[in-house]
Image (cartoon, rainbow, N blue to C red):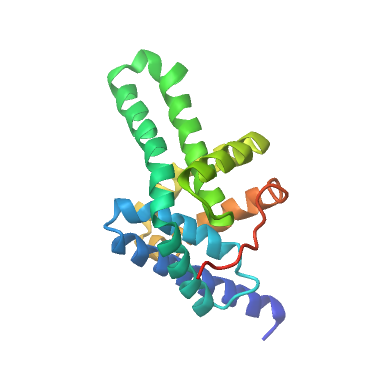
Length: 197
């Protein structure tokens, strides 16, 4: 088997293992409360696909998930509530939707992504995660906002291709996010943080 085919099949297997682990972690956290720490663990794992096997990635995700459960929820949920509130108000107040509410929701979602990305790179409290998110977001704002624009496409693919969502619904977007942000934030947030014990 050629090196390209071997690398491709290894990546597909790793992405599927990461995604299935992330779905299990999300369910373990009760759905909504498990989503932010599972996303942080998925970002952590997709940044280490070159150095760890699928089994090591799954075990590391479990450790990362447990260690960052409270931090991820405390940092992300206030921002998620701003997003949900803005989108809800946009339905009620269509005159303000395009000018104020949709941009506010977009920026809050990008900032939440910056917080999750910071949690996947640096250990600390929720306050530290938000401070690191501010640094990361200010260094590469469009790199955080572009993946938010891709969310409707990801939701569309998930609704039309459930098996693709099952195997790659979180891991493939997280690999894209890591690729997009790793170069822009290499000095602020190193990707090789040790697995928390």
